[in-house]
Length: 297
Image (cartoon, rainbow, N blue to C red; front, side, top):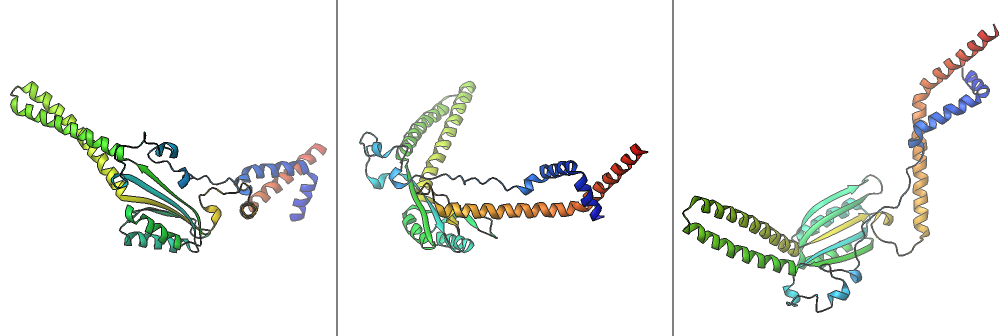
């Protein structure tokens, strides 16, 4: 049967080619590797490019952009930090980071691991007291084989916080006046009107109080996002060199392995469908022979 199959292929090369094209189109997603694209990351500003409160360095040191209260201790600054670390064991490093955060009085915001069974990588976000930010960064970096990148950013929200306080004072005074009016008035329409104004004022006050508390908590608790991986190329950082032979070599190896996996997957699929394909092809071969015999007869 196999010899007949190969004879049929030799006699029907065009048909065989068309069948192969159809098979390729059907299984091309499993034969061809996925396109290799460089991972896109949000790169965070380095300290020398740090923008605080939307003000550039040039404007930051200008007295025009600085509020009247220039005492650093009275400023309300929300600090965030980002670390990219190469570690020996991603899962172990993740656990140690969470434990150290809790010891410093902080807590984990979110944590997830990607591809834990192979070249694992993880992202952890924690919050801890702003006063212990430096200590936490030092402890986290000690867990790394290599610190790929470290960025610290800050946002000065003092003016926004001061503006909220001023608006709250005005709203509280206005609310007090309406409450006085409520005590004095006896007419139902006026009472309803004053109540509507009081409800509106209370909503504005609640909204501003929520914003104020959010700024306070954000300034008290700094956020740190740590990227972990055993492979430096899996971490979000901007390479200093435009062309890096080591990176090209690793990407080529990954592409080669991915291609082998796709080919192996296609072969497995082909082996599964082969018992079905062979009878169909053989039936077509017999049908063609009978068709030729009918023409001769």
